[in-house]
Image: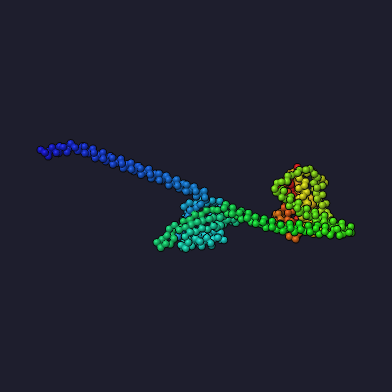
Length: 412
């Protein structure tokens, strides 16, 4: 009877037990779902972060124009993970899957041996890092571009030998161009300092020569009673005074023009008359055997520009021709105006100028022949003044065949 009562009691409680078990199972299931959802959310956030990191990573590489490469030492194969180098040429070195030997052979012969040895030292373990800058030629173009590479050992075998090399390569054309510009600027500055030193020496000599003559002739002048001899000495004193003033005027003129302190004074005048006056200034000082001629395109030409500056240019060019012409002729003239511009020229049959010096002669203080009188400022002044008149001074010349200087300026 008792057993029957227990069985009935158990049967009555069984639904309640099953209900509790179901509730417990549901709680465990919900807990598991919440935990799984939380982990899934975390993994999704991590995946998103990794993706964002990769995008930023590639963006930085692209901005820097970098490539990332791996080199398997055992197979000798070079592979690229990313390559953002600027590919502006029709040929580009280092392609995916090539051997390191092929990569090195594509480098400029001037750098290939050095780069190859550096890479070999890294692969053998003699060095732990690699950094090289080298040129890469462009076939059929006779040009090259610059690359810079860094590399290090990423993996070793059990014996410590390098197995995997990881590196980066970047095109650095702009940086090398900037470096070259800085080197040229430094060279120009050093050359300018050298020329200034030479200028001071030249000026000391050029000023001392007429000054000594003035002082010397002036000191003996009171003792000379003969009028002809006194007149001769006075003429020499006057000539050397003019030379001294001319040197000082050159220095002052170029300083004023470059500093912008001297403004243009535009006047209207006859170009023929102005050139004739400039020619007459030198007519009596020609070297024996040299003829001074004119080649005016018109009988009269009225122009408007700064007459003083144009006259100064003409006088400097005529004086320059006289210095280097020992025989033959010097011709001064101009061509018919074209499009509001006129070209004045001075042609001589003198010693001429070597091709490599055709531009250098317009530099301040530069002298082709140190034995020719002058401070090396005349042609520089001509070009600076021509620029201020909206023009330029150019030269055509060959050694032994003379020169022709042209001044092309705007006229009104």
